[in-house]
Image 1: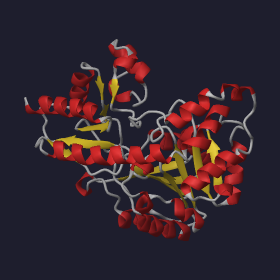
Image 2: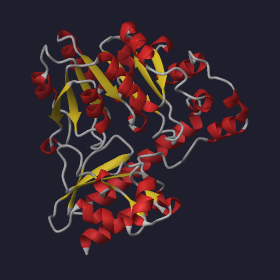
Image 3: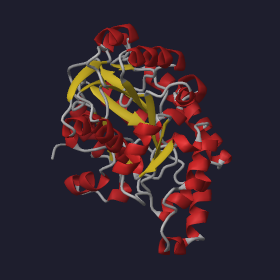
Image 4: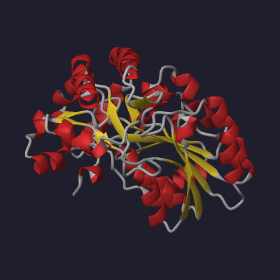
Length: 364
């Protein structure tokens, strides 16, 4: 398996391929909060180990109420799942869209699930000459009465670009006129400077042709816990999706963790301050390198383009992994190639190490 085929979280594969102990790899590829699991979650799990002896509440009422308080979505609109990936799969199976548009480059799971459901896919490209910002007018021209579903990751992975709430409302109006749904993956929304200007969550109260998917893996640093949630006010679609989903797919530990993590305001505040501060600092540092183009981001990661043909993203990947530093070569994403690298924000001293290595590679 080549490095470009490896998922950002597949440290075990990287560890085996390069014979580096997993715990020695500094992972700039996984996009996980560098603060790690909130102490509140560690405490509740450590003090309730016997919770695994009982089934979770099949309706997950307390968990949905905690998510409702955190997001502002109505408790009855919320469906929880075994990570955001289960909910992406569940909603796509439920809709079984015949003709979908995916804003791309994007997470490959969207395309995989639509294809498994027998649907046709139209990839709508975010253009490099537009700094990967969604051209809404061009997108609206592509939407027809044949369109069932538009898929948008906001902020987008891997570009970090985003769509504001006002623009989302305009898109939803267009889709509603054509009888189509919008799926918004908000995996990275909590890292945005001002969540209220980007998140579609308030729009769930206005639009029934919208469903939002979120996970806890990145912001709350628990990819192994497998806890995701969705919000949708189309009761028919949501209830059918719930029927497709396995009962108790969220285990007792994930249920416990979810009931406390969303109320941990100290952790949430600390994370946002850290990411915002480091995002600005890294931006200033990397803008001084004339051999790369750095794109604006509202997430916890950066995408940059190499402005030289003397070295490829794959070669930079190899030189960095030799020093136990793991970044993402983005050449397997649609519309990107061997000129693009993505890396996430870690702690300041780790960010300094990566910035210095990138400078050394490109300036020598």
